[in-house]
Length: 155
Image (tube, rainbow, N blue to C red):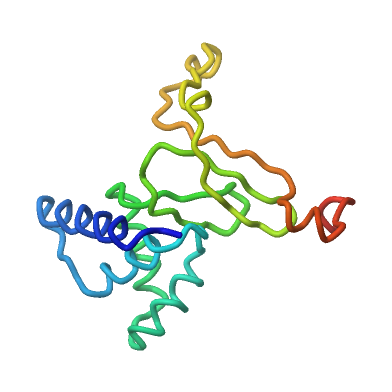
């Protein structure tokens, strides 16, 4: 559970960043960020849209997509998941990693000093500049494993 004070800090940091960069701060943008900042579920754009629409019935899916792109560009959120997956978003900008259940799609944050110290191998550095490192561990969550889904993902 994300503490309300933590949500307020993330929203305030975004508002401050926008004002410094001359970006218009709208109620819709704030509500979209607030929706992401108050959950650790890493929702996709459609889920964010449905949840925000409960509070702002006039919001459009296009506005949500454009705002998510803006929030990502400004570093207020990060895109999570593989390229082939539906894009999911994370308002936690602290250094952290992700555990993804390959069965149900659950995504959860975890912290690891050991993984924080990951060094880019020289072979990768020779391919080009590395701007960010995102470590994602995949497996089956406890709930899926308890349900007896031992055979792996369905085909």
